[in-house]
Image 1 (cartoon, rainbow, N blue to C red):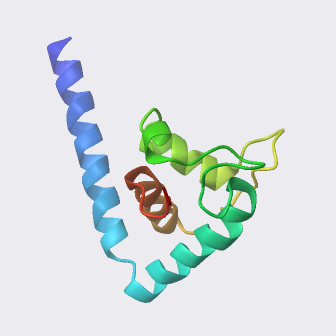
Image 2: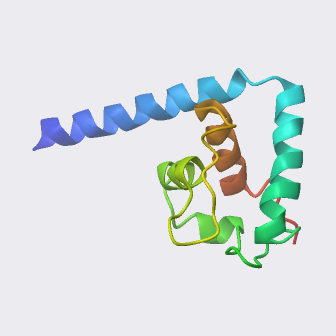
Length: 111
């Protein structure tokens, strides 16, 4: 049991390290483009300040409840039965990780 837990924790740490490295590979210009996309495209449903609208509030306190992988999958595949579209056709996994990470940090959330 202890070995299994150690393996799981090591795997999670490795995945997080890879995700951080992938995020660092994005250019500053691309990060700025993604920031504008979140504010404009995501903001059209989640509210321009991301406090909610047609889509739910994206405040960092609420997003703490969800693992980063959940947010990435939501961005990647959308939410069937809701207006949330999949973004897999136009965003890379690194870009999706960057957006999810920034959302959890509250980078674009306006109080």
